[in-house]
Image (cartoon, rainbow, N blue to C red; front, side, top):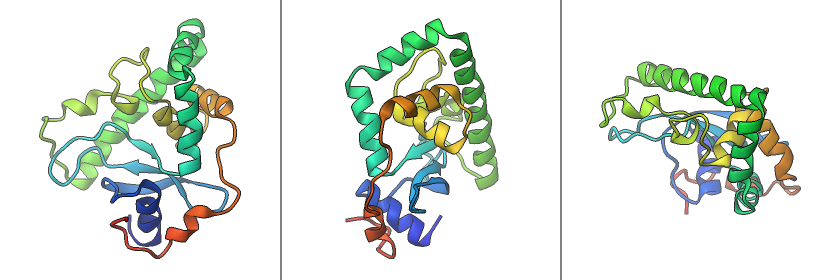
Amino acid sequence: MAGDDLAVVAGQLGRRPRPISRVVRRCPFGLPAVVETLPVDETGRPFPTLFYATCPTLVVAIGALEESGGVRRFEWRLRDDPVLARSVVAATRYVRRRRRDLVAAYGLDSVDGGVSLRTGIGGVADPDTLKCLHAHAAQALARPGYGLGEAVLAEAGDLWCADRRCAAWAGAEADGP
């Protein structure tokens, strides 16, 4: 990924992003909102999150949900709702497969010998355990139909800004501030 998309993502994050393969979801203004990160960087250091939310408004909305005990509430829901639990298992299988495919497609080598590729959403190995609702929300935005992620998005409230604020970074340097 390069050009304006890379510059916008760098601006959204306030830093140069980890290696990214593509933008998988855009906000209503057409700007990057969720990216697909490569599972390994140029030094071989693994990164456990496949789909990464970059839109600041989206990140704040999901962060507020996490701060209000959302991770624990969604873990309870997983235990009580087999359909929701199955959605996490299916999404985890997809994440593991996609990350292996990216390693092969980009010819990447990992310092951990590929151990990190066996983790699931947000780097969690056990689909019954949640760590980061941002990763589940990003998964749902990248791959609609993911039940748990869509439940997170529904509870998060307003996901998008009303003023195209990220457009300010289009055409800027990709190294961030």
